[in-house]
Amino acid sequence: MNLAGRGLNDEGLFELVAGLRDALQSTPPGHEIMLLELNLSNTKISTTSLSVLSTIIDLSANRLKDLDLSDNLIAIDTKEDERAWEIFLQSFRRCTVMKRLVLSQNDLSNPVAFEIFARVYSQHPRIEENMLLGAPSVGDEDEVTSSLFSMAKSGPKALVSTTEVGSKKACGLRSIPYIIIQEVNMIHLGALWLSFVLEVHHKPDSLMAPLKFGPIAAIIQEYNRSACEGIVYKPNTKLFANGWKLLDASEISRRQRGTMDQSLHLTSSGSDVSR
Amino acid sequence: MSDCSLNLFLLTSFSSRGDDFTPLSPVLNSPKGVGISELTSLRRKFQREAIDTLVQRPQLWSATLRLLLYSRTLLYKTRPVRSSNGILAISRGYMNENGTAVKGVHTGLQNLRIREERSLRNLWTSSTVMKHPSARQIQTRILRYAADPRFVLNDRQVRKIIDYGNDPRSISRERDHRAKDVSHQIWHLLESVGCLSYII
Image (cartoon, rainbow over all chains, first blue to last red; front, side, top):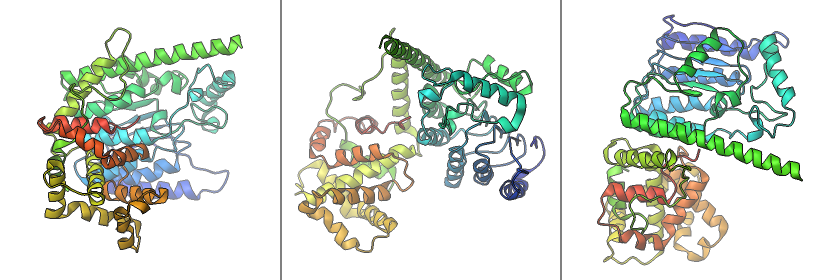
């Protein structure tokens, strides 16, 4: 569903959500309506809409792949805003196929926005190593990979978690390969909270298979040029040198952790073989 | 409770190490000594700045300080208080002057919808009862509801804060650092109880 650029505003969104909720909840078996992508970019919606939107996100937890809320009026100024922001972020808890969440060009200048983001992130289920693509401990890697490619070919019916292995599914904010927060007026104290998330967020290539050539793949290639992996926070013009240093140090730490994890895998798989 | 009041109470709070801003928890060091250590150092700097400058203190830190204050308050209720002791005097004054801490406990009790408030409050004045595991659980729940109704802290952090607050030895450690500035003391206190950041 692409509503980008329409003057929807909060009232319009409330009506949209009410309609969508009915449609998602009350369709007969075999005629299900699935919300796969929702583009609400530049629709003049504010933070008030976030808690309403969370019901739709939760209802589409196993289907929704892409949510674009960029260039809106989202700002975390009041206690009510904080609550709405937290409810919104929590609504991704059960989401298993999200590939991209875009929050760019909103006002997240209040550090509490990133504090709440870090808290919700910490509360979402951890991703176990065997849930990652390409992990040495994955039981039947070929099967997973082929199911992902078949998903890309055959569309919604084949939609499974990008990181599903057996009955276990990665879910929540931790499982979203691309979280885009460009130009959100982030300041260094917001970057402080983001640095904790950045340090542990898995890289996109371990959370999802490469996309086939197309518009979304082209956008993602553009993100990769920003030298950010997964959590895309460049550019953010309000962030000064020290903030960038902190985020750069987080990226270095993340890479070192990744290298250490790989060495551990190699060591453990080597010892398994020797047994 | 205002952050200012918390600052007043916690002027004396943190552990007794002489080194400045050295974490109690082990810090991963990168092979070349860059990256992670620089990350830790920058984080400390930003955290100090946040304690010094932010009008609206991070929710995690506020909840931690509130919970610690309530835990301390209860500790003083169950032990003899010497008025000559600066820290205890601050705490006593705090309770007597505005009763905020006691009010917080009341809120917790109301949140739990427990009718027998009076008998439950007596738990803290009876050392025999307090030795019972279920009494400690109730105490923890009440303190948590009072200090952290939004559940910003996780279970591990709650336990650590209450244990720290109930440990009389922590007071003697804090006493040595009363001359340091407030942000220094608060930083070390938050670090001591593992609440400078969320456990991600």
